Length: 195
Image (cartoon, rainbow, N blue to C red; front, top):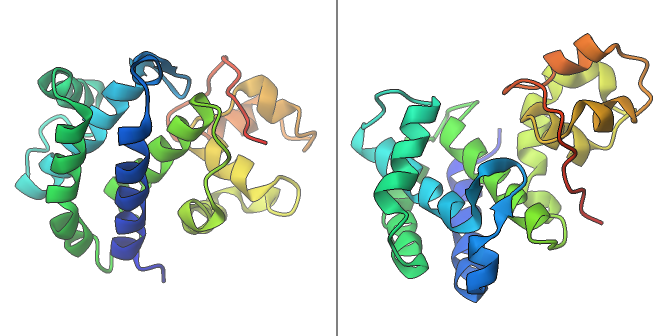
């Protein structure tokens, strides 16, 4: 089984390295996977999830009111403060996911980290930062294993590929069957696909 605590730490380290290098324009840009949020707001959400996950402030999780609260409470903070908060809770989050086969907090950071890379036009996340999640959700997409690139399945399962993008795979699945793959429901807006 994947060491989800170590996996989470890898994401925190990579995001902590990336975030301070971003320009004001990049931080203000919309994130395609979460079109209501900017890059700065995604960072605020990640800090908020970490904080709530270790303090037990989970009322409304994982719904939009809960996630909006993360952003609204932190949108005024500097990137350095968001990174500090994320790192402050790193040990506790890593310890809390030990032995959990489906750690939502960890998968959340992997999905949003990939969102940032795609929206900013950065290279695809290195395999070790997404493949364990793809492997964990593989049973739910087993009929597509070998037909669709694993990274694309990882993104689609978390509703990061549009209906049209999934239909272009040419798997022979109906639109309804493809919609069922998406944890957060289907989407119509095409998403950026990294090279």
